Length: 238
Image (cartoon, rainbow, N blue to C red; front, top):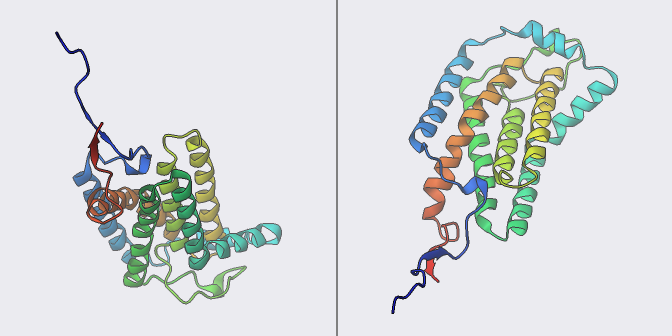
């Protein structure tokens, strides 16, 4: 008698279906691009000087009335402390909704590993912010250097990470659309306030676009599988 029953096959105890957990097909290339971008953008920062001071002044001239109040509000809303709080809240929501700590940890790790090193480069390059004495509507003097813009790096990294989390859901298109709008808003908020040169913000967008995929490979593909509670679920027999 021939047994037509299908053979036993291993299955995952807890499927990792979330898009941010999908392994990169080109990890070495992704890491190389990320590292290369950090090196190139850091070197560029040393040579920018005040090359776009005229554009910074022109954008700052728009800082009047409701628009000025709006850009001020955006700048304060995603300052480091509020940005960290928002990241923690979204991480918790992902954990609760997914009922799995791995996508939540992946999200938080990608945002942090993309964002935090930009502050190190900021101190290394030490590019001054636009001179308030030549601005039509100067913002309060900022004590730290301006290149790259931490606000912009955070917003782009946050958008990329949340779009990965929602990649295979009906919310993905909405996340991409709203995220793109948020990035544009932050870009113009920091440049209209003139707390950053336009090239600071532009370099920050390039930074996050190149570094976030490398951060995901480093954190999700290489490090998380080696940490207790963050490892992928082991196959079990049916």
